Length: 443
Image (cartoon, rainbow, N blue to C red; front, side):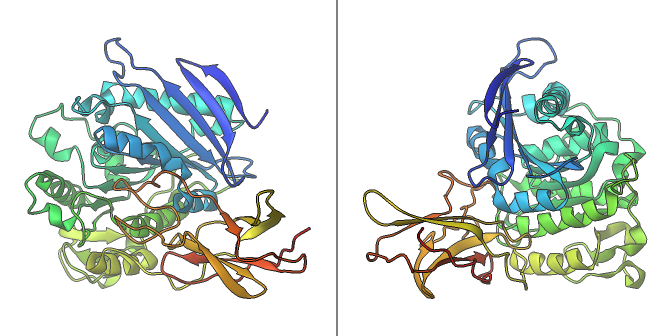
């Protein structure tokens, strides 16, 4: 199969292209809006990143944007996110970013209620991507569902329709729970399996007193209390620094999914397809709106109202996150590799490289050295409007902002001889530096 092709899929166009840095492949399929009763009234594009060298995928991590034209636009780059790709690569999962074509001012619930056609389109996209990507298992493997605002509304309803396929769920600033409880939308049937899905409710603490977004706080708190009272493995992690924007929530969301994938995915090589059950006795617990977690066996508070956390590592990240709005990292990132150096016809030396994000804290920037001395940084000034400054600047929607940066630097400082050694150093999200890449010289 060629690396890039265009082929008509069922009701849509499908593309398969290499990623910017050659690590993995993006598969994309688009569908037009439908005017048939019960079908999705908006067009939608699904972009799936598949790690390089994977024989068989074990799952799909879905990063679902929220309501409005801006959120739909933000969702277009979800599959390009190097940090979320690091999690997907670790577990041989695809990273899927849907992007609905909802015009501004139009009814968001026409897609964020999956019963109105978006669930059927999502399943169709998995089938089409599976048949065209050389990964037929993509249609049947389980999912991690991350959703923001309307995407969290969608996720909470998918938890009721497809609980046996969901490894874990993350609800950033949204849920449909209060809406169906008030009778604003049809109340779904909630099977017992829904109450066995590891879930994290993650509102912005400043939403609590914000009239526009107060419903996100109240709704997630109501869902948390209702589900936890039934023994569900569900947590509550208010972000102390934000309103409705996603902030630095990824520094808790990624370790949360990492822990859930470790405990719930079927063991490789066993041939089993059923998700493993959560062992609640091995979790950690904390009082809701508290900031101290302890092993479940040591918790003395109200179990029915306690915050559930899957393990000690997530508990430590949670304790830091609810205090500061982020979580730390004590380990350096992996070193860059594949450094190439070439003279440009118009002058200067072009340096390119490849790198993987630090799974704990992502990538902030790269340091470029020549003969042991730093000559530049990429980017020179990392951006962080909605959280930590990063190599891929994050949007309001927890997706990389465009234009996506390249791992590339032009050395114009002086005429360089063939014996100069170039190296690249990665800097992670908390400022820790990797080992330098092996030295590379001009050919």
